[in-house]
Amino acid sequence: MQTYDGEPMRDILLKRLESTAHDEFLVYVMGPYTTFRLDYYLRDDVDVDKSDIDLGAFGDAETELFDELREIVEWLRTDIGVNAFLAVDPAIPTETVPEETDEERMNVISQSKAYTEASNAVVFVLPKAGVRDGVDIEIGAVLSGFDLGHGEGSPQKAPQRFHVYREHGVASATLDAVPHEYEVALTEYGTRSELQDQIARFLAGVLRSERRGDLPPVDDDT
Image 1 (cartoon, rainbow, N blue to C red):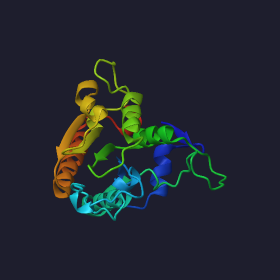
Image 2 (image 1 turned 180 degrees about the vertical axis):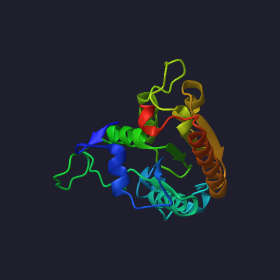
Image 3 (image 1 turned 45 degrees about the vertical axis):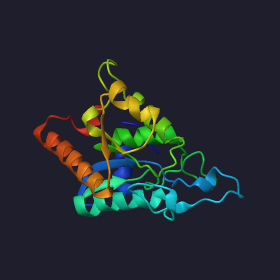
Image 4 (image 1 turned 135 degrees about the vertical axis):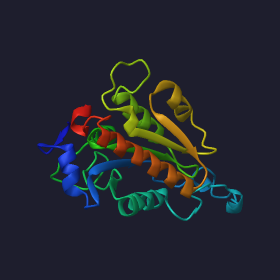
């Protein structure tokens, strides 16, 4: 288990995250934080009819996807009771944070790998409305980093602990390759409620597998 400030990352997360009904069941939620807007890509003098833009299940153009993902995490924590978190929640600074700090900094990829290693389940949420610059790369880095590719031998973490959720209509060569390149499940969703039902079933399955002994303890995964 990777350490941070001299302690296993799992212990750090359990200390820094607020308590839930199932504290020990850590769920790392990944996804884009920024909502797609045509304004990002068009000149200032080009008019944009926002009514013609289909943002899908997370369709509020005025709300950043960070806040939408936060709602998913809070639903997981309160309704499902698992210890779900986003990368920013443990407040471990990355190399891109400009503020001065005495804490050890981590690069984004290393941080994601450490959170993944420490978690009972890892959920990737890819909405149509998201600006995915860097997210697809991060997904590939995490899956490859744990040797989850087909024919790569023994994975460093059980592939049953991972699930990728892609909204209908999301075009991504990386996501298209997931079921072919990795031993990780990919499911498509159409609405927010459908996504929540799918995540709840996935997590229930992981929890059952842990209780039956079909999955090793997280500390033994890697």
